[in-house]
Image (cartoon, rainbow, N blue to C red; front, side, top):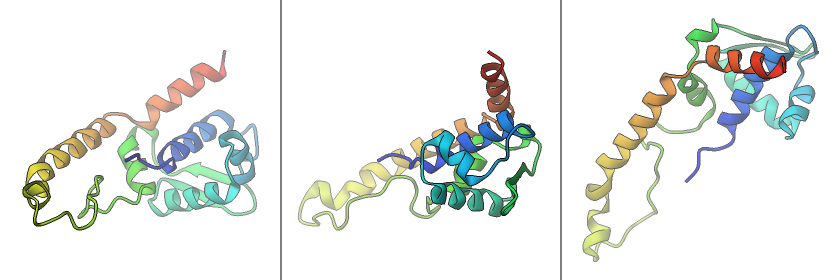
Length: 145
């Protein structure tokens, strides 16, 4: 299982905002060229980030701005804004209807649920340790080269 590309696309959008704000008109078309994806995908992600309170988006004018201080937005905040992970289901999904006649199938949840929950918690905790301020500093460093 992979986390969808929405998360890295969202981080790419924030990196572009930092690199090009005030220099380029930041539109979904501009961003989609940098990301090399369809502008519709970019627009969907922009709306998710807006709805999460992370971005302000003005349609038509290319007005995209970050709504909070960069050090107040963690990678986890971005992840939660764009990933469709149900808090009740979690990141890991089981195949449907394991055999109840098999001792492994009958007990697979008991064998794995706690371990997979711990793995997800560790990943999310690590995401909380990284902020868009770090990403911004890295972007400034590479753009100046």
